[in-house]
Image 1 (cartoon, rainbow, N blue to C red):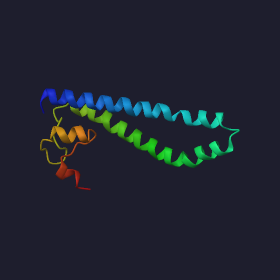
Image 2 (cartoon, one colour; image 1 turned 90 degrees about the horizontal axis):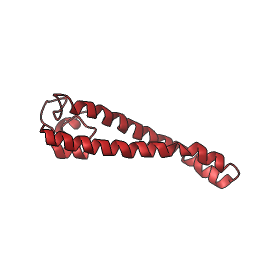
Image 3 (cartoon, one colour; image 1 turned 30 degrees about the vertical axis):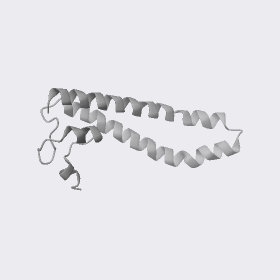
Image 4 (cartoon, rainbow, N blue to C red; image 1 turned 135 degrees about the vertical axis):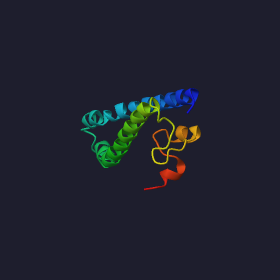
Length: 111
């Protein structure tokens, strides 16, 4: 993988990590919203109903954040840009589309 490709991908990953951290920071507002709306039964019910969906979304955001952080380290290694299963080069466009991946398209379909 070329140095300029690695730099482009690292910048892309850093931007996505910032986005994820902002979303996670905003999620901390749930408890605050719930306490502020304790006297509004309808608003409190809405927050409670959406809590399990929000919890799943937050778990997905944390997983993506962990994978992106792991791939930042991978990009600094000699294995950067190569499929972890077959060793083929992973096209830059694939890595930009799915920056958390370490597999080429063919190997990504293997369970």
